[in-house]
Image (tube, rainbow, N blue to C red):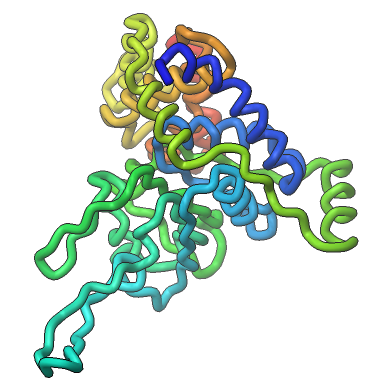
Length: 323
């Protein structure tokens, strides 16, 4: 299938995915739209919210709807890095009696990995995902093992104010393309949740695309030409978050977004536009995904935090200021 046909088939695929996911997950339309952007842009995604808001269910439902390989790691304080990446075991050949080491693959060897409550384990274990997320391979005992594409980490995170949580290291957060807040449902949505989950069996999402189709769309989106206005705006917006920039709102920022944010803004805007049937992304497409790309890359200074300011407040001001 050529790129034109792939592009034309993307919007119907998005609608089918939204319908399939909607059979299981009630509401959360913005969350699902952003998640699909990360999925098709081949970017990792972080879902932030209190327990009980269907974050885990959402990720599991996406795996069902796309037909990709799915793995789950429940992050706990006693989790070890080898519990994620795998471990070498010593085994004996029953015929020759010779002993040798064999690498047993961990749950990271999948297409879509759910890192559930990722911030309930210490940073040492969180770091086990760094190489996999960036380089799409795992090194263990001197050997490097490639991960089959696509490889995506969709992680859930509890608010850091909760007991028993550890802050994600900045290097770990920077690997995530998007950070998506998951809020409480509306009263009508909550009523529908209660109806669905207290009568009969829980529904499962219908598979509407497959792994090969997803890979084809991801590669097509990477081949689309860049809009120079979008590239310049993405770089300008990311730069405005950094200390020392001329943006007035940046005075509240102690640490800003790096070049990876500019890359994610550009590919994210391209993907957001394509999923809505637009061949060429605009500055509005950048603004649509900018908060999700930038919010986990900013660290506010003490004065801003003491004054009750939030990262989203600062971002809203920055986006308005940059124009």
